[in-house]
Amino acid sequence: MMTFFADNLAPLMFFGLIIFMVIGYPAAFSLAAVGLFFGFIGIEMGEISPDFLGNLTYQMFSVLSNELLLAIPFFTFMGVILERCGLAEDLLEGFGQLFGGVRGGLSYAVILVGAILGAITGTVAASVIAMGLISLPVMAKYGYNIRHATGVIAASGTITQLIPPSLVLIVLADQLGKSPGDMYIGATGASIVQVLLFAGWVFVLSIIRPDHVPALPPEARTLRGWPLLARCARGMIPSLALIFIVLGTIFMGLATPTEAGAMGVVGAMFIAWLNRRLTWKLVYQAMDMTMRLTAMVVFILLGARVFSLVFQGVGGGHWIETMLTSLPGGVVGFLIFVNIFIFILAFFLDFFEIAFIVIPLLAPAASALGIDLIWFGVMICANMQTSFMHPPFGFALFYLRGIAPKSIKTSDIYMGAIPWLVLQLILVGLLIAFPGMVTYFLDSTPAVDLQNIQLNLPSAPGNDLGNPPSFDLGQPPSFK
Image (cartoon, rainbow, N blue to C red; front, side, top):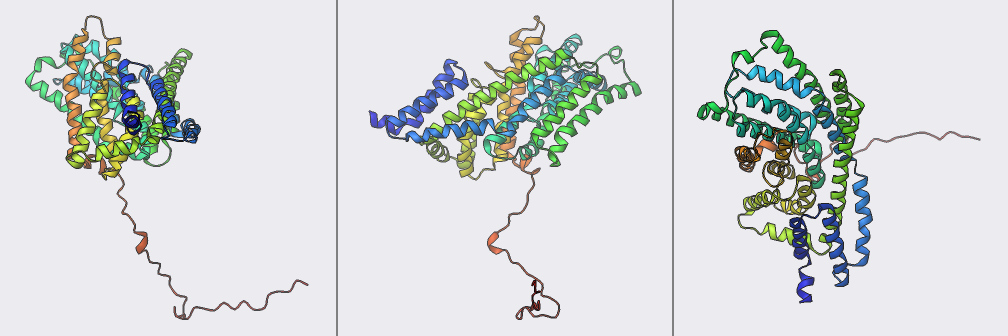
């Protein structure tokens, strides 16, 4: 019995963690507790040496000294400021008036504004809450189907996960050991396809169910001509400027994600000041939410490092890699298994927990199968969008439930999310079928074979390479 226990510490450790998660114990403490418990068992059974746990100090230091993770509080703070600075109101009102004359016009406006806010804030909560407060009453007033209205608002908010500068992409880049800039560039094509899929569904719905997405009546379209263009520009110009400050500087190599996030905070506060919304109360609320989210992420990451260290020490990495690389179907079988596995985990874990716990276990197997890790990370990010859109931990639905009128049933919010959840899964399938959606945007610098490099040096004028030139310096000077 003891021999069996010693030979299977890794799978027992993994299933022990799953039991803690199912019970509902906090993820950070579950990870650390399971890691330390099995670490002591491994020492007693001679599977790992006592000195091995001394590496925990280095793991803790690497987390706390990781400059990349500083981008998380910056983008969170920026998102909270932009949520309350009036930018979303300007964008939604302008685009709502612009597209209002066509069926589904408000839905197109919500999708477009969700993409723009995603490219600015990087946080789901800011997008969903801002658009829900502004758009949901208007859509309900003009006869939009409630399930469709809640679904498009929640789904458009989750685009933020895939559109740079997403917090999820930063975390995945850190866990996969890749550049956040490359991850951002790779996610560009996937995020564009996601927006087109959402808009395509609204177009289809406007044909098969026109009563669900009616056009605004003429009396509701109060802005036309130059006033309408001015209203759109009032929201677009600050948005484009902020997108350049955050994303443009990263893509051009002028700033790291952390530096771009810091500049984005300054830009967001400037926009709030222009709209006369910058108050001490707003700054305090933003700091409070930033502190809470950052503390949660750091504690989860610390616990994940404890679990991961012990798991690798008892042979867990080899066990996972062997199991995943031997799946039937090769690379395709591995990708299908991974996506189903993450989709199921998303019912119980949020995206931070999945990124810190699961991705370090999957990355070695993906590398062994020759999978591009940037493409792999973008595909996983597209899958993890679903964690915001289905029960029991669909945070986008929670946010929407919190700000929606009580007259809207919770069942309508959940049922309205189903078509958009399917569209997100379609995107995952498209990424598997057409990996060029990600790799096309990456720099394909040709590999250089160091064994075949030749250096051809020109000879000095009048000299043959066979007779190297002489350098007669004469007598050295005397310093007597």
